[in-house]
Amino acid sequence: MLTRALVRARAIGDKAKPMGARSKHRRFAMERGRAVLAAPLLALAQWALPPRCPGCAEPVEADHRFCSQCWGQLRFLDTQGCTCCRMPLGGLTGRCGACLADPPRHAGVHAAVAYGPIARELPIRLKHGGRIGVAETMAGPMARRMPPGAELLVPVPLHRWRLWRRGFNQAVLIGEGVARRSGVPMARQVLQRVRATPLLRGLAPKQRRAAVTAAFRVTDPAAVKGRHVVLVDDVYTTGATAGACVRVLLAAGAASVAILCWARVIEGAGD
Image (cartoon, rainbow, N blue to C red; front, side, top):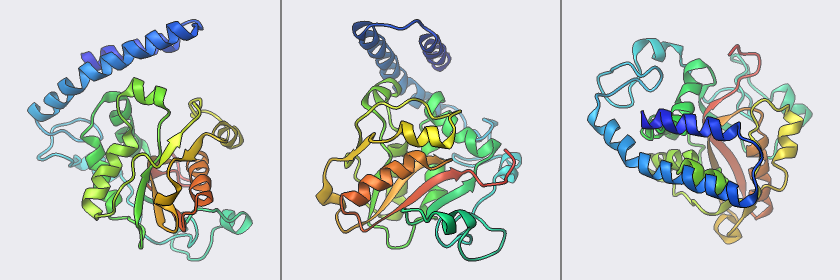
């Protein structure tokens, strides 16, 4: 009930009239306070209640296991596909048309599953439902897709206001699970979001790229210089956010930057 109250409060706040700086700060402080109070209760509930499917919340035998119906709807991705961006090519090899026309600066997008109804449910439950344990569910398959030669994990950062409101950064939680499983260290603070950006959902690709321009900076270039970096995020859609992060990491001296995520949108796939 507390989680639902938080969601309702956030929805009401989003529809409110424009506020001054002081009122906005007070609202953020109230939402942050609710998130802090809710976190231990949510953690206790997850510990006390029986294991549930991460996709549909039906009871299952053990934590981080899917029910048979949700499991059957997940499309796990393998290492085959475009040799540049890792987009599945239906069994073909070589570079996809997009990479031939405009080669990306990243060293590949390594996703655990294809984006779809069940795959997208996990980030929603994590970010907006407070289901912290879902981060571990995603981290397992992601760790198995770790790019070879990875030396440092860097989570996609949230702006401080959004972090304050949510209480956690989902990319950090996922990255911690991946780091434990893979042995690749993670640098939480090396990448910073210095400019608040609007929600990208519903924006065209060009609008998304414009929204994240100059939104990130590297706080410690020495930490990434000459290293093969892996950028960690939950979902890869158009690549606008990841692309902006890749550019600043490379500019800071990273030898390469690959992208590791739970789910990616597959071109031509129905949602």
